Length: 121
Image 1 (spheres, rainbow, N blue to C red):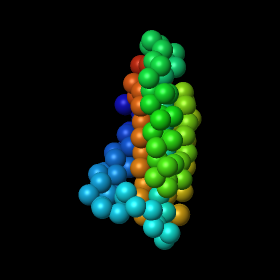
Image 2 (image 1 turned 180 degrees about the vertical axis):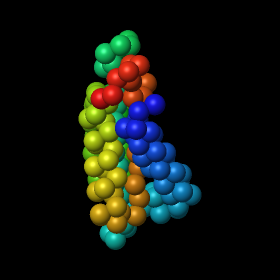
Image 3 (image 1 turned 30 degrees about the horizontal axis):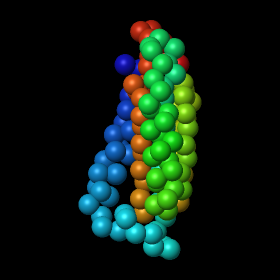
């Protein structure tokens, strides 16, 4: 497993954990003026070495729309390659920390990051 893939997995796990911790917070359904909510939504369905999936992009669009209606500042991306996905997740994590947002949510729909053996990028 490459170092970049390990970092990507750790970022995803950290964001998932923060979402789990906030899941019990009763304030999530309310939009208070002082509470900033940020979300990263990724839908990947166009894979180079796998069948094309239609549902992930459609699901991501629906999730982004729902999160916006709940007061989230949403960053939505579709059909990212590994390096693009890694960069977007890193940028989101950095923006989340800088902003001091009360809630950070990461949603991913698709097969996952696809790497062929020996591929480093």
